[in-house]
Image (cartoon, rainbow, N blue to C red; front, side, top):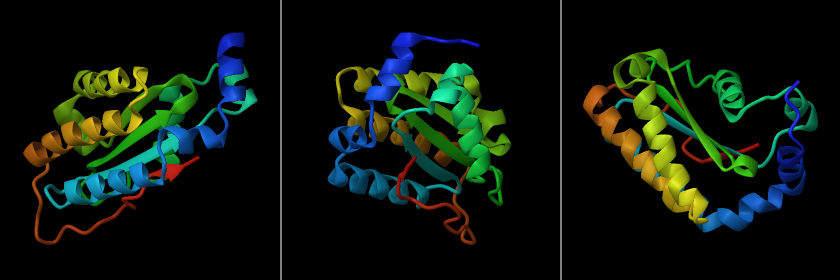
Amino acid sequence: MNWNVKRWLRHELTGKRAVARVLPAESLQRLTQDIAVSEKRHGGELRLVIEHALQLNWLWNGVTAHDRAVKVFSDLHVWDTEANNGVLIYLLLADRQVEIVADRGINRIVGSAEWSRICRLMEESFRTGNFEEGLRRGIAEITRHLEKHSPRRDEDVNELPDAPMML
């Protein structure tokens, strides 16, 4: 057990409406467009998932943003792309933490240190309340890597939805 009262309270007070406050519909539309434009420039697949807070039992058991991101990556089959180059951007709003989980085809090239650097870059913007800006910066950085390491092919198709998913 890894019980943290401050974290529990933060998660209890971060309702679904908090997402709409920090990422209104217009922001989500711009993020959707950024992902769609990004995927036209490379062969990778991006999936953005935003979760407002974790359930009490997960907090009680010490589930971290990383733990949850790995589970979401699996549940949404981001790993199941033709070229093994799906990338999940997972934002846990209550903790203001972001995680990137990448499939083996791209992860072995880019590596965890670089994904972590991109996450910290996004979190810099989150600390000042600029969630859209932070996510757009992250998408741009990931796009740069995918352009370099997963070039677009004529036969590439859009395998994952471009619109952010809310949990």
